[in-house]
Image 1: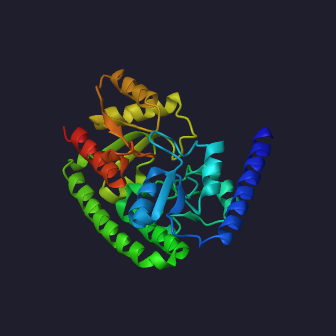
Image 2: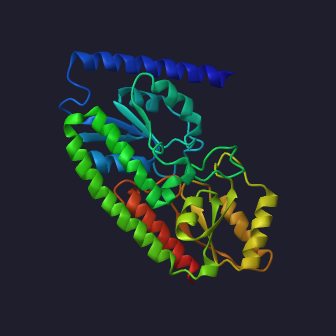
Image 3: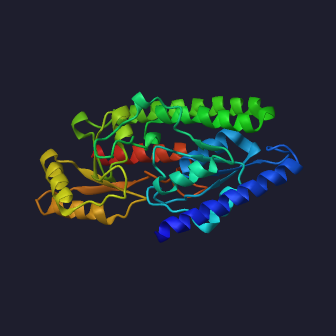
Length: 313
């Protein structure tokens, strides 16, 4: 009950601030104005799309930085203020930001809130049986699917600032060309792993789109969302699979505690098989700002290079 009261209070404050901001803008310039468009995003992958499409016309503030798990994230008072000051909010959708979904719906009555995955045909999405009838939200692991979010961002920015639509379209084209090259690169590198070794085991089940797109069998200790916990039985079952298939490496994720993978490694070793931790992958969060892994392209290249290096031994 306390949580619901707090949520209602946060929504009230946010909507009041949005209303105040809209009144002030009607007294001044157009929504885009002479300055940059104030954008708030949730995950880093979306921040990167907006930055590439919007270029110098956008000022992007991401809510979830390196190592942050969006499945469990709760909006802070500072987040509320940042969203209140924004002119548009981009989020993933498909229940990735589970605890913030209602907030985005409330905000959408006062300002543009855009789920970047909306343009993706639902027939292309994965719907795992254990995810309560919802779709798997981790679409960025298939670069060809993530490319569809670029169009959504360009369209939303163009609606907000029609005078710069040509610029956004030019930026969109350039970024899509880079993503097409990235998709081809991941596909080529994946083929370097012998087919029998193309098994990716991580802490939570985030890489299914990657597996479908690039030919890997994917297993995770936790479910699609990290809100679910892996039990002892889950660890032992997956350890048995590793031993049976002689999987050489398993992987930790930057946004998930390493202890689950360490437990899996120990369980396999207790069965006489020395599986190794093949490296750290970026799953629900990118790397630090200013690094290669702090961009979507750099993150994806890091992941495939790490996977291929570990499984090709």
